[in-house]
Image (cartoon, rainbow, N blue to C red; front, side, top):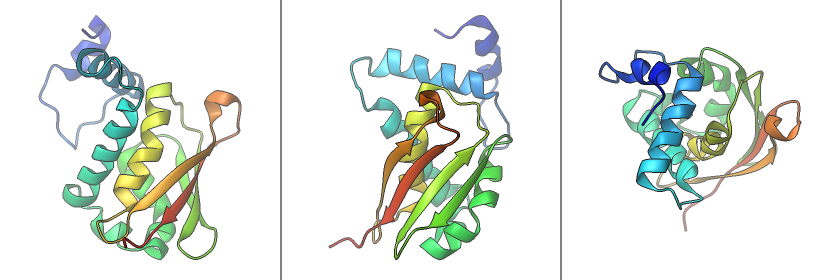
Length: 155
């Protein structure tokens, strides 16, 4: 169900080490929603959260996000490991809190919705879940996308 130009990007088996154009990734996510959950308004958030969990547990990111201080310090490296454009900063904002800002990222609605949830999945753990709340979005005219990030103790 993908357009021909996008379809060719996914003709070979998917591998972590193979980069895909962001436009193709957004088209793929849109096709997945149309085919699997057309009436689900939270599809992209669930997709993003799951992608973040997979990266944390299977993608080698666990040591980089083991705690809030380490994740804040390594935010730029984490971003560059996932994308070849834009940049992310995590700015400490009190105990167990940060602001995540994504700059210069050519985004699409599907990716915008997925990115905040991906941060929750990537930065959180079973013992210390992370909640993200979007504060600003470039799609609404902001200079960068921004989320409040809060690490919480499971209790």
